Image: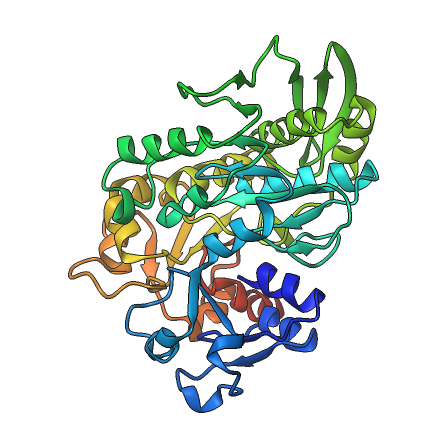
Length: 416
């Protein structure tokens, strides 16, 4: 949503918005010219005429929001529909997948930027180098995330696309994993050019892997990063990625495959991957003593990848994992899988479930999640920092897709 807001602000279009809470991101948008309210009350509306105003909303909003009733006489469209209108007329390069969309799209945007293509980008996370999730450009390419939530990617008709992974998620929308896979197949059917993935999908025209035009080999961890050989059209280039986790090498290789399609030379692709500085809230380091790492992981598969990386980097360290479950439905649907992953650290602290758009589901709580996790406890946000300090950890993981990131500064201040 904020990337779309930034796009219109960059074009001189007035922007008014609502958010539930004030954050650093909303403060940035206000500084960039947006008018923002945190009250679900139309008294704060600037009074712009309905016939001159378009309302763009996210389906992640709670159904009880009064703003939706107020705006029903305006021209309204979902975020995904608005994104489609902005990018479908350009040479759109889309990144889909249940995990890794933000990393892959950000790497691709960086490669195209280094190559001098001056791309436009709508990214789902804040890029560390630029400090923003939107890049205005004058070149032909537009990089976007193709989000499967609420079937939003069906509004996109890209020239080329990648699918990072397909894993059961958003079952409140799709019902089961097979229906989710069918949606990805339908999305790929809308791509006019090549698609790239390591996932076995019938409509995929190019599969990422050994022997294909673009692939990676000799992958090896090095001081928390990964070094590997990138092969582009038979030529091999040594490069490295400043992001822990072998899965991120896979993401970088997908980005490289699309960049090759866009005409970027292999040497430039390898150089750009080496200079990529990462994404905020994706294995983001905040402190060294103790180590504090913040991550957006909110699905068991993402937790597994995160913890695998942490085990590689800190095999003998005392690790405290602070996890904020995101959505009652996701917690319910993957209760057993979450319990397996959350049991892997020396100590697990669970915050109350972040509901986002959802109403309470009876019996689905952080306490229920903690029941079968050894050394787990549930605490409230206001005592989190003191509790972590009492545990004397060597590594602290602050994990989740809700507002847990707002607590990082407080925890860091308490521990350092």
